[in-house]
Each structure stands twice: as C-alpha cells, then as structure tokens.
Image (cartoon, rainbow, N blue to C red):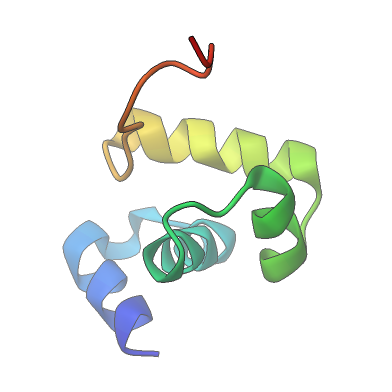
Length: 71
C-alpha cells in the first residue's frame, strides 16, 4: 500500500484508518461515489459522509468542478 504510506507522511497521525482508506479509494478512482466508498471501505454511508466532512475541514480533499446542481 504505497499510497497509505504517502498519505500517512503528508498528513501525519491526524487521520483515522477509515479516512486513510477513503483517501486511497478516491486516489484510485476520483469519480467514486459515496455508495462506492461505503462498499470499498466497509463502513456505512453516514460514516463516509461524516469522514468526508472531516477531510474537507482538514484540507485533505476539496470538491473540484461545478456544484451538484447539474445545470
């Protein structure tokens, strides 16, 4: 798991195991959905959403592209 080591070095010990797995899954497939993350990481959808909020607040991830409005 080279990406796990890379993530660990950049963010230190501030990330939980689930957050690290989420980052690895996003790195492997940037278009992965919340449902896909839930299945891949093995946690519930609400837990994925909460971890994504924490990762955004830490600056580990950022939304790229338009708002989800689809317009």
